[in-house]
Length: 95
Image (tube, rainbow, N blue to C red; front, top):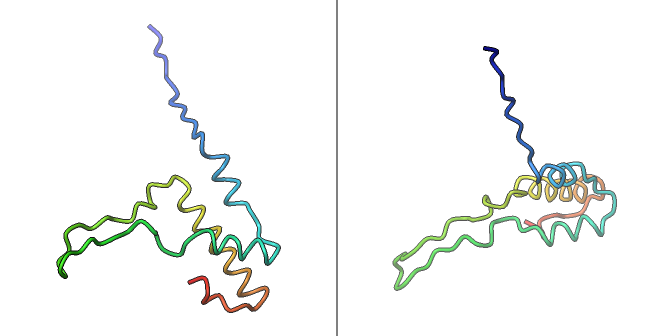
């Protein structure tokens, strides 16, 4: 009997969007500023719930659950680098 090999083929349906985000270039100051304002520097969902100075509950950062998290952080970094390196702007406003 002839053995048949099965090729495990996996298609990542999010890969085109990831590739688009990774390949995006920043060329205009307005777009760079908008990206820096829209993408937060820290995860906004992380919280500590306290009562009378005692931590009752800690909500961990949930941003890592976003399938585009790494690409969005990279895009924000590109925008910050463009503003700082190309335009010489003070980027402390966005940090």
